[in-house]
Length: 469
Image (tube, rainbow, N blue to C red; front, side, top):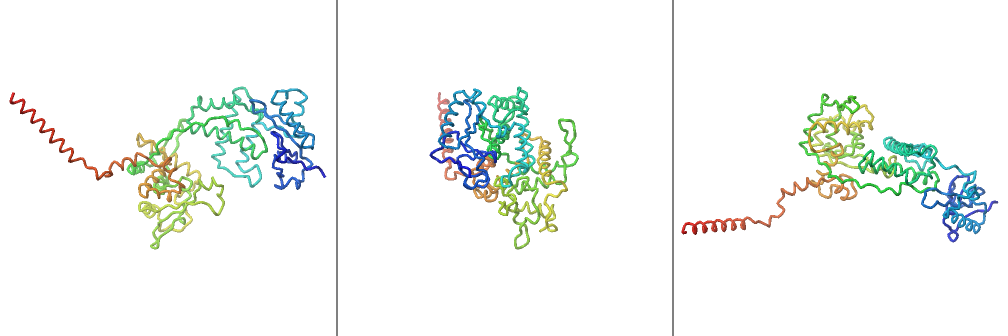
């Protein structure tokens, strides 16, 4: 029976790890088998275990690896310390040491292109054990892929071949090329800049967590830009009514920069905008609303609409769980009239039909609502800029005015701090405060009358003195 290798706490040494040639990954210092999740004594591949030393070159992300032949922990510690000193002093360039760095049985370092391919496959649910998979949306995968391709193209323009570049050989100069392209060439806003950086940075997080790599994330040195916090937009009721009046087929044609024409009118645009303003739901939840999600009171009137909190469920990875988070929206008198007069609620009640009816895919309707809203809003000619998401913000502002701090019970927020920062329009509340009689106990009218009387007396006295002269 082969000797069971392990590193106890008293023998832990910087850079010294256990390596399994069968799993092609480091066991680390936990002494737990990666395959069985139990003690190394139960590992069926213990004969493939070896001590390995990993040391990073000074001022570099390049790592030097040496698999030790010894099975004795004390000898391994001495060799690890010696190897570390050689690498840190630069002696690793000697042929004698260079040949020992990577053994033939070890995997060759992944190239940047290979790593990118693995990462996208993982996000698509096509790579990795089932318990590690979290399939991301097509939009997110495309965004990540585009940013990684952008990074590869940028370093290629600066003389680096991404197809031959090892992920361990990415330098800070390459990160600098990407930063300069995003910030100075493309002139991206802080939010977009941060998203591009984070998308590529996520590649290295994935490699360490799921591909058994041990690599420092070169993007950790990038200082993220602080986005400019703009005042949340509140859409006034009269602005909404003006918008709804111009939503017509003839005003739906949009000429793109390419010269092509796009039709932004769809029969469901008006009803989608009304529901967004009166329900305050995000687009994905809005287009998923069905008639059977509406609850009625004892008289059969619709009073509540229950929908899945899609954003929270995605964050918690419980989209397919029975314990999904939901949001319950009150059916206000205005929303009730829309349901009864425009959506034939009496005929559709309890059915599985969608409130926003269309033969298009739900994800396509989500995209159409945003683009059509922006198209028609621009035709109003207002200085105020608004987008579809501002309909939800307007709903939340209205709820805050009506219910105070209890509004979060309707909106689904955990605290009022998030609402204060991202949703509430301060100017709206200031305008309302200006019409409130906040200081009724302070009345300066009498003092003003006394001042006026004294001023008149002084003026008359001066006139009399002038006549006597």
